Length: 248
Length: 219
Ligand SMILES: Nc1ncnc2c1ncn2[C@@H]1O[C@H](COP(=O)(O)OP(=O)(O)OP(=O)(O)O)[C@@H](O)[C@H]1O
Ligand SMILES: [Mg+2]
Image (cartoon, rainbow over all chains, first blue to last red; front, side, top):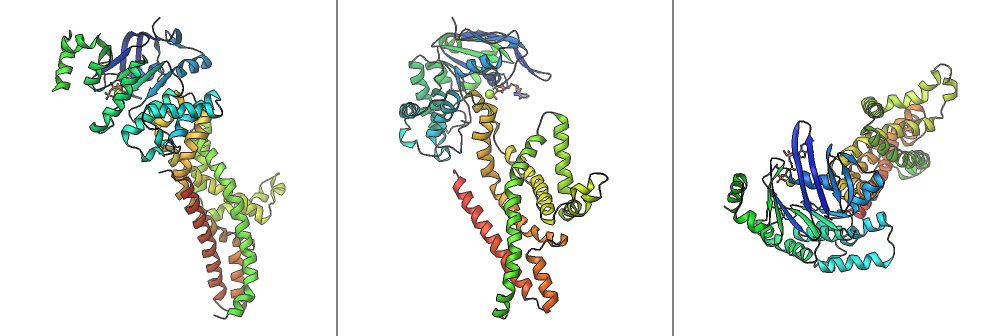
């Protein structure tokens, strides 16, 4: 059973069609890179999956549960449970600036899952150690570098024990010398067989870590396949044009 | 300036200061939550509520506070039928009109504060499973308070000075007493002493707000 199953998804903002009849599947443990030029609908696709945008038609099934079937959404309770099975990492981190690093990690487990006592704190410290930031637990986010902020954001998403992680250009807001530390955390997650859908401009990452690449153009999935195939022998002219532009 | 004279008039002026402080202590904590409620109404998706809140802000900010004060003290009793039941003491009329007026200003300040919060804060909270209420109380309001605190401090100082307006409905506060003594003794000293009392109060308010600002500063 696929972890993510999307069928005939379409999405418009007013008269602007942003996603046109998008269908794809992601298997458990897959790392799927989504590439494509600006405005092709990559972010919108991710946002639809995690209920940040509502769609009018199409089907989204997450781990066997329908978030939305032919444009009809699950009841609020079910919807929330499905969304909680996914974590999302944003381009601009979206850390809570008024809370320390540790409290950023603890807020949702405490409020949403009612976790109490030392257990969530120990898990938070373990996750911070995993992303290399256990010594910064008491720091306010404003004092961290971009790369550190994004690593905290990843740890915060992991606190909810999601089965799927969605990344929307996690390194695009970072100075080039800071992208490595974030990509290396993502690489570790991929090794642990976390199911990941990653919108990225990092072609190196897509090539090395992803086991499948989706190329989007004008709201459609134009081409998809293993990175070796898609990067070395793209079938579509537009994919070729895009790849030659980014590698240049 | 004759210090023994100052000492003689001081008790009356300090008595007036009590009115100022009582109004301040009542109006600030009442108008802040009311202002926030009005902000929420003004951004409500249900149009009639939104229009009502916007009209409220427009009227309260667009007319003189003194007029509003007169309205609640002198005007209400003349309303047909229910008027006679609406006779307020000068202190209640002052507290009421100040609260309603300041709530409108705070509503505008809070609106600006809410606008300054990145929409990513709402999005990440939704993705993490927080309810709208939890997002408001645990994420948005704490950040809004920090952003708006300097403006709220400004308004608080204006409030201290605006209390002088209640002299016009014969509610005895600092200025009321000062004016009485000036016309009785033919001297400017009471005005100067009154100025010092106002300065002392605004100074304390400023220091308090600076303290709170430092407390909630998370940079
Ligand atoms: N809330 C919105 N309202 C109206 N139009 C929107 C909205 N969000 C996105 N769009 C439009 O939808 C199209 C696709 O946007 P999207 O953000 O999904 O593209 P993208 O592939 O992520 O691009 P980028 O690489 O620049 O992030 C764009 O034309 C964008 O202007
Ligand atoms: Mg995007």
